[in-house]
Amino acid sequence: MIVHSDAIGSMVFFFVMAQLVSWLVFHHRPGLPIIFCVLTCDTLEQAIDRAGLKGGNKGFEAGLAAIEMAHLSRKLKSANSSSATAKPSPRKPRRK
Image 1 (cartoon, rainbow, N blue to C red):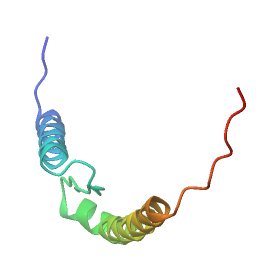
Image 2: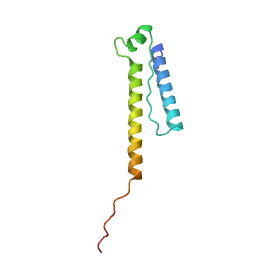
Image 3: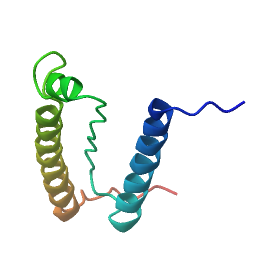
Image 4: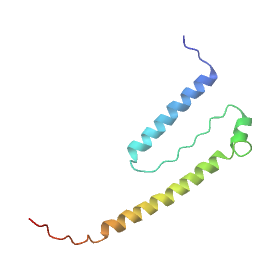
């Protein structure tokens, strides 16, 4: 038996949208760090709570995560480029 309500419909919509957006970004920009934040609020009270009152400001938290990810990505790129341009150490010849 399938029970359908607005709550179940909202959850299905959220999962479909999250999967679609994730798939599109991953396939069009592979290797790009992604911060994905969607608030699904049923009431104005929930939206206000998630915007900073009771549950913390979820949008601000996602923004901070994106900034941290950008800094980390930049550090990793510079570390990889400096190690790729470094000269390899000379190897000793092997004895036979």
